[in-house]
Amino acid sequence: MGNTVVVGVGPNVGFAIARAFGREGDLIGLVARSESRLEHFVRELKAEGIKAFAFPADASDPAQLTDALECAGEILGPITTLEYSPMGPFTSTLETTPESALDAFRRHTLGAITAVRAVAPAMEKAGDGTLLFTTGASAQLPVPMLGSVGIAQAALRSHLLCLHHEFAPKGIFVGNVCIHGQVSPDAGFSPDEIADLHLAMRRDRDKPERVIGQLPPGISV
Image 1 (tube, one colour):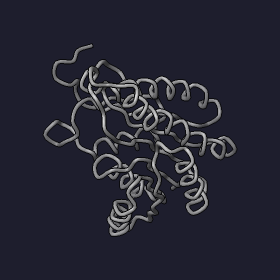
Image 2: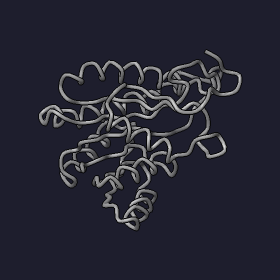
Image 3: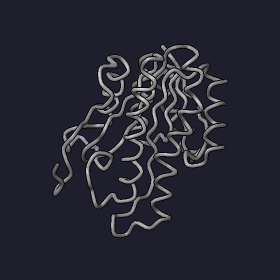
């Protein structure tokens, strides 16, 4: 049992992760911009007997996100697992502008840095903790249709792999689940399968990255 906070929770992957960790006995904190959506998620989890709490915040706003995570720590207790997977708009490579690239960078990369800095000190003090991230194929490969997000997630992946090496001696595990393709049962994997991968990473702590799915059409290594 522990205290898990999912940042950027949505109706598919984020919610499935929250539910999976809640079924393990964790107290669950949910962070997203929409307060009404968060309240709906909390009701859904409570209906399954999972204790969940909502902390509205925009992941791209450092002050909001820091305040939300501090509040979560006060209500849940020390955060033992953080999962970071915000979603948002994106532009293709040729449509990417400095503005759209910066928007994606704030949401995916800078938001992750903010979140880690908010929860890591308590984990370091405890000598234990888990930092999990969810990225897409553009974090690893050139995917032109995801131009702005690819810039941000490639940077995020580089950062979290460095965090993995820096935090390992301190008892903190850092891991990334990289999704290649669309999330749907028809594509060969579901949100629940992705959530199970996150659980396995927290349990096994054997490698910093796992990939699920196949490469997008027209993309090759």
